Image 1 (tube, rainbow, N blue to C red):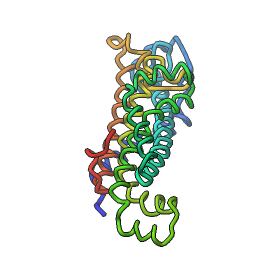
Image 2 (image 1 turned 60 degrees about the vertical axis):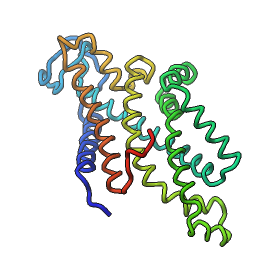
Image 3 (image 1 turned 135 degrees about the horizontal axis):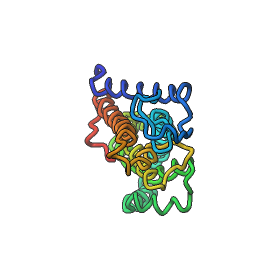
Image 4 (image 1 turned 135 degrees about the vertical axis):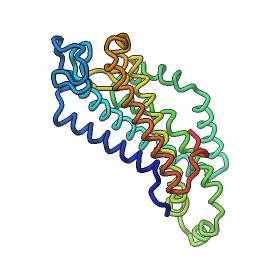
Length: 273
């Protein structure tokens, strides 16, 4: 196995810092929703506010820490749920073939034909703005890449001698899929999940920015940036620090995917987003 590469080390470092920030915010920092108009627009480092305050006197550092927790919950939930659905569809479609494969792949094609933004805007009216609704919303298009990647891997592996021998020995279809075909697909699934995490973080923040995502008191990077965009020239810290943190989280996700790809010998460029 390859040694830990620089991309993976940097990604792990960024993730560790983000996790520590979220825990520190939950335990030590003040409530991110607490308002004090007398402390509005305090600059970084003033009156005990490390990253300053916004128009309502809310602590920016607290908001960032809470937003990291929200992003982690949404991102990991969406990736896990999407992977379970997509891997199941890909395994069944690739192994069974025939009319079932055709039906499942047409469902994939239909999903790919719908622009994500149109899908999200349409479904918000149905699902609402809660955190579970946001997770469900982002899962709608996110399972498709897993299904396509796993199906392609299964099609390439289902005629291997070990798979043929398992079938001849009387192994059930479920056993063949889970014990002989699924393990070969897991490295690609792990890399895809890491890369998709950044995509999920960006969409969650973008939807919250235009008031289609989670609503207060649940914190979100999109809310923080939207609240301070009109004051960018006079209070730059209100937007810059949340935006920079979001960029670093997305960078960490991409570096994690690249690092895992090198470690597991998976070409990340061949993984479809």
